[in-house]
Length: 358
Image (cartoon, rainbow, N blue to C red; front, side):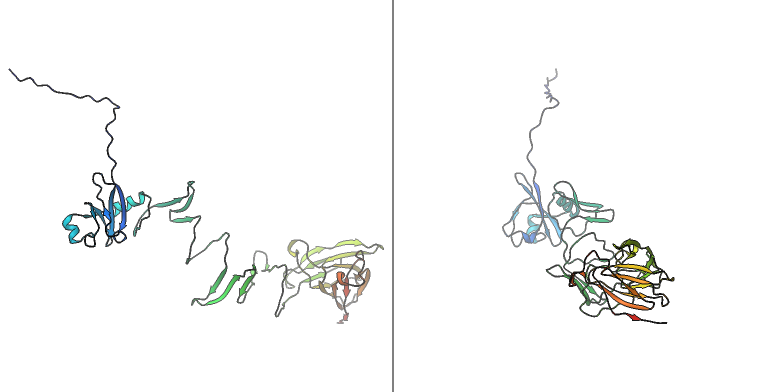
C-alpha cells in the first residue's frame, strides 16, 4: 500500500500586484578622488545604501565595491584598498555614458557622437553639432581666433586692429565714447566697378578736411543748348544725357534751368564744379543755375566764336562772351539788402570775367 502524498498548488490571478521592491542605489560620480575630503563616506550600493560611488584616480575610473571611509592610504590601487577590496577598476565608456545620461557635468577627454543638441526650457535648439556643421544661437566667446571666412550679419565692436604678416599692428578702426569712428592709418577707396562701368564712389553728407585736399578731375556739366551731359564717370567717358526744363520769367523771357546738383539716375546727387557751354550755333540761350547756398561753380563759354550764353543773376541777364569764364556763387541768405526770392537767379553773384581767345 503506497504512501498518500498531498501537493499544494497556489494560483495567482492575472493582474495581482507583487510586493514593492526596495529602491536601488543611484550612481554618484564619477568625481575626482582628490575632490573628496578625508573622512568622506564611500558607498558600494548595498542594501539600505543610497549611493554607488565612482571616482577618478590616476586617469582611471574606479567603482566602490565595499563601503568605507576615505583615508590618506586607501586610495584606489593602494595596498590597503586592494587588501580590503574597496575599489574595482571600472569601464570608462560605460561610466561616462551613464554620467552623461544623468544630465550632470562630465569631464570627457575623447567622445565620438553623431549629433549634439542643447535646448532651452521651451525646446528650442540653442546649440547643435550635426552633419559636420556647428550652429550656435547664443553664448559668449572670449579670446577667439577665427581662420578662414567669417560671415557676419550684425554686431558691435569697440576696436579692430589691422596686423601685417609679422603680427605687428599697422592700423586700427575704433569708436570713441561719443560714437565717432576713428581710422588710424591710410584709408584707400579706389578701384573700378566693372558692372557699372565706372570707378568706385564715396558718398558722404559732409566732408571736413583739416589737411590737404585735391582732385585729379572736376565734376563737369557740358551744355549744348536745351540739353546737356553730366560727366559722372569723368571727361574721358561718355556723359549722361539730360534734357533741361524750360520756364518763363515774369516779364515773358524764356530760359532753361540747369541743376547744379544731379536729380535722378546715375547723376543723382552729382555736384557740378564746372559748367561748360558748347553751343555750336548763333542762337542765344538764357539760363538759370539752380544752386545750393554757398555752392560755387566755374562757368565757361567754350565756343570762342559765339557770344550766345546769358545767365540770370538776381533777375538780370549776364552775358558770357565767346571764350569767357567767370565763377558764380550763391549767397542769397547773407546778401544785404536781401534780394527778392521771386527773382530768377536769386542770390547768384558773378565773379571777375576772363576772356580767352584762340
